[in-house]
Length: 386
Image (cartoon, rainbow, N blue to C red; front, side, top):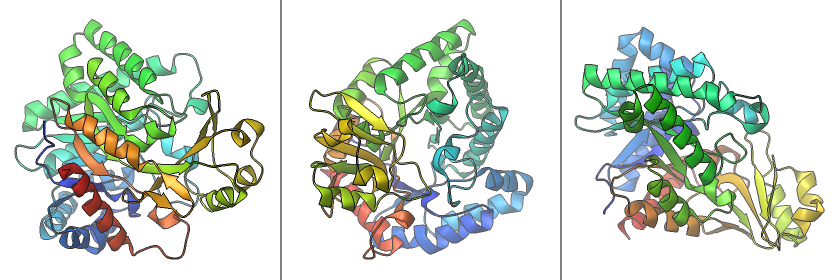
């Protein structure tokens, strides 16, 4: 099949915003100019942090202002990124981005609020999607029963989304986003979880509602970092009945010759204090080893299993139009293969470019944010048309 006719979206979590005014300023300063420079329709995949959702729900005039900002910039909005709950641009985000997790009422209520706002912003006749955390971070969620405690929360959300559909006619789907070193990380883990989730839904008489409203967000670079075959991964998810409600169009850093000190020195420039950069390697016997975060000391003197590996991959979102960055490569070939597999599905997931790291990319020759985002959107459109 062909891709959906909805405009390609880019995620606004790249813009700091802890209030509605800041969200609107980002649309006017960046999103609108990107849409104009791109030369084709562009959608805003809004990131609305918890304080923004509270403001929108407490003051109807603020929602009107947001709607007007989208309209004057000629931007549709059909998807939200509800993964980051708080300040995604604080000095240190790292593992804090996974809090609150899906065992908490705070995560449930925030996502309900996102759905209510999105229902007000959706164009007529268009379904909505909301991406969210992969239940939690593995290292912080090792307590027995963690996954089992997430399931009632997710089923409660499914009921809320079904009620919202009854009240507004809007279909909004949750998109749980697997990520390296999280509770949902690999494709087999994701399939196993949805099997358990739907079994619980069936026992509660909620299977149809759960299957309609609960699915996943396939972030391409996340599965690439895991050294998964992305095309086969997407086919496995299809065969298992796990619906991909949203695709994050992303690329990660790939290190082909990590034994070269000059290459590792270039990689060390990507070690930065804000975001978590899970680092994986595939050894000569094809075992996959990992490190929770990237730092300079690791690049200077990698442990033996990394030093002997043929290739490293790092969870650092880099521009999706880049095949390489200096002596480093990217996982863009995996992106191409994933998009081909997505095009073969019998439904059309929402498509969103999500490079949130522009502000922490190393190097002094970065383009302006508008120019960089525009180049990503244009390159992605070429891939989709191809």
